[in-house]
Image 1 (cartoon, rainbow, N blue to C red):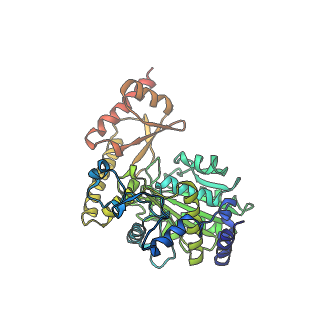
Image 2: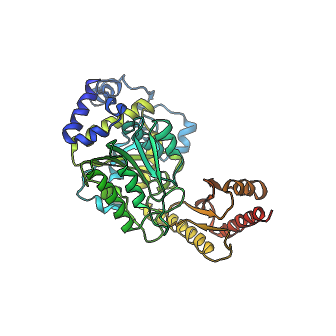
Image 3: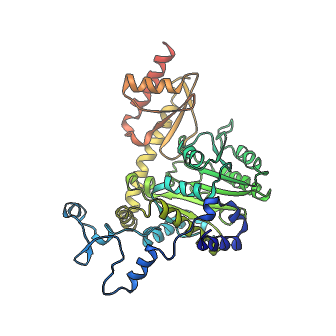
Length: 432
């Protein structure tokens, strides 16, 4: 094992032996080089005042070389903030500003120990870092039965984790914290579990209420007290899009510092929160009461980044940072929030109107981009293909009877027409 990796492992063990036990084999072996090209270039950047012949970019006229056909479209930004490589951890100011934003939006983090967010190439990349650091073959990865299908690829196919699902909802349409508890306690003989919490949930658009949140935290704490090391990933992709009375904070804040056997990891980003999907700017943040643990996990994260994408895109980090610092940011973001909230409320009013009879019911939704219909005795895949082929309407079939509809991409004035068409398509098949 590389001495740098061994030292990072020692630092984690000294701070929290349980976190060390959570690491995968790759997680134990990975490190960020201290004496490689990046570190030597960083040293030269500070001391090479005459000539700096270390960096792998081209320069011209005391700045990064660039093409005018590109720069003329980006003239509001200095070339130095666009063309050079961003640091593997991301632009330092962006990391700091995002951390401040996290604290402002999650007051429960006050006084807790958590690190500086590391920039990822959006949220999927952050999730894959978690999978690499903590998932070995056979490790239990627990998440609800209604989920984003990429979890299977990220934790199951890539890392051979043992996927454990439980029903998302109870019969009274609340979050199934007892199902989570049972799935966790079933891992006692293994001594380890990775839990993925995604709120607002994709595909249902559901975020638990305050009491449900407490029950989730209690289930995780009970597992830790039973001797299970739990990595808890809060996939906060749609954070902030809370339209009704629900949790308005990430559970990351309640989980931070809760128990030595619990390692909270927050995955979030500008991607959906700031409506910049193609910018691919996400973040990964660890919580621990031990600074040495936080520092070591950051170094291991940078090792994963260095070994895969090297660093994230610089221009989009600059764009996001500029937006976050703008005095108009909050107002503009709230305007878009109100549009999204209006669409969600319109959908709920339509579904509650009674005009669609008993063709379907729907799962609870109060946040995010999506909602899910639960079809009564009608194949979701049959309806999906029928709608696409006969009406030119696209939806997503999930499982046997669930149909996901993204109200996020339909103007409010067209939502009634959309659901009328879905209903008409359902009637076609039921009456065939």
